[in-house]
Length: 283
Image (tube, rainbow, N blue to C red):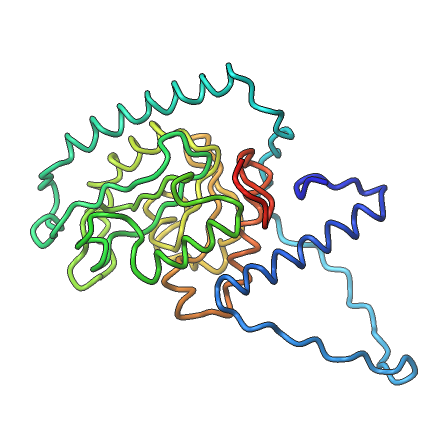
């Protein structure tokens, strides 16, 4: 049974779905190094306190999730050829953009960089991850999301049933801010057209904004809004749904919020047709 489709009239399907979710939680905990939480034994029935139903309160309005993708059919030769052609076209656009960006000095971040970090991944990816900006390790290697935060992002992607080379990863700014400070608004505004051009070339089905600065840079939330009030919700970026969640670096400092990030990532599953079930091998 697909993890993404649930028949509410079938109790056994619901139990199987709940079991799959529990397995996914345990697997993510194992991958991310979260210790398993022990479930206390139930009290005897007669010793349990009475539960008083809380008053009914209308839930706050939420942004509707995009419609799930249709169940994937076996890819035909024509489908594979079309995907390969789209990938070649996108690779050409990204290569041309990278050549134009080489040696960029449009903002002051260029003054202290070691390498411009363009981003990397599948040019025809279904999922694009957008972060804040390069750190020390990214600036040294010229790649987005390396070091400890990159290792955690890799585990998150694998827990989703994907590999790093099957997604596209980029940042709001392409040069490391001094001392890893937050990029200034004018710096983000200067670099944003490059990110827009990347995403328009890749054409992902869904984008995941990692952290507040990524969400602000994409114009999804205001600079004075709290990330915690906006994470887990879909927003629209030029017709593409975007899920806002925590940055891996934040999760390294606050491991208790890894579960919340996993809940956010699971909302992307219905939009991804190429992901594999947990524990399955790549086709």
